[in-house]
Length: 190
Image: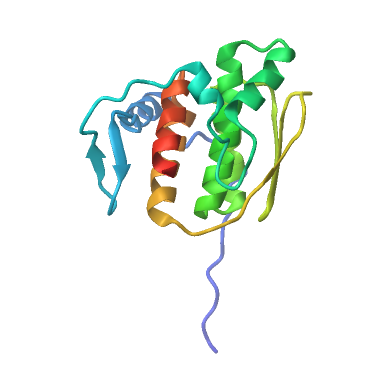
């Protein structure tokens, strides 16, 4: 009864958390070697063999994510008709695929939203509008079409851990290797 709550002091002056040089060191420390396989038991395992990247036609047939019937080709075709180049099309596919994968693996939506906005910015996509819910995701880029995707939230912690590491690596990359990141998402989701 006699304990008092400590007073919390708020400083309104905004200062960077790290000096620019330290932030650069942190960014380079977060780089992830995507030539390693998925984690099993929390440890990234080196790939046993080199995989030939799938052709654009093969990638077009891949599903966008868990519990979703749209394919990568559907999304790329939609943005190709709007005049987007291939790099931007793949960037949009990556954001959509990560959104579905992160929510299906158990990441809270309030954590996924800012992370996905950062990935979209790293991929130089127009302003990303996100509304993530427990069962549906609404995502659009700039004034483009709104993607309404179905999701079923689960708890697959080893997959969530790998996806989170991958998403952070893409988010801090100066020029993310979108195709390589898409291949990594596919490998993690298997």
